[in-house]
Image (tube, rainbow, N blue to C red; front, side, top):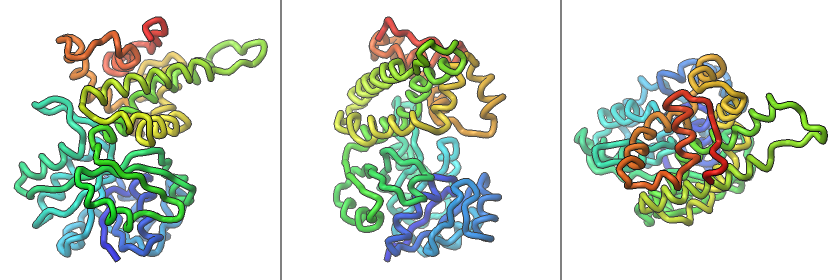
Length: 348
């Protein structure tokens, strides 16, 4: 039996506890300062108020102030399941408490801009912890199509785990694989993470036609908007592939679970597709965020704000050919400059 800590009691961090707990692992779910009410309910009833599911009995619950007590007896694995905005908080906390490195696994999806340029979160996390004097950490990641509520209901789910160290794969497989949770593995951490992050970004664009349909006059034959959605989906995959090439990742992840698979499921439901729908209805980003999604983290929009200016610099200096990224540019204009979303169909 392995001992793991999952930091972050949101829907995904909590749902991620199900496969290892069902497999008999010892799982410690630790809430963040944003999870106080969730942790109260979990400790009271074991039912997650947003997942609407009872967590397995193998899962134990802790507030973040209690992390020092359970981390002193070093776990076999720590899973970071906070929002992208909480990554620095989580790393600061772990760097302070850990006496020696332990393997980390990132559920959090995102990219960040450093002095060296665009960086994936596992690389950023390892470098940040090393700078803090916490040691040299092995940091892996999880990508692929996984809706938290479906995982908690134990629906069949296929994902990809990534790590630069293939020797960890059998150990991770034994810890997480179950009769409903099916794992592929890759050493292409760059391709995996870039796809896992950018699918949220591109889902903003793919969601636009559903919003346009909502405000358009109904066609005489009740035609839907599947054609434009499919066209945008295809363009999103193409531009994602160009970015993976630029970052020296592997195209296998673009056309696998982390890319096409995860983009598909993200476009079906969730916060990013809902924001895309609002943009398609004609709302400005700031208007939609403040009026309709004030208390929700829209990861694709947060990513646009974080890396949009850097991508524009790459376009401006010719490092990236901006004519090859018309959808990317449209999303940046809409989110970073609060402009009406305009899909540049003739540029695709």
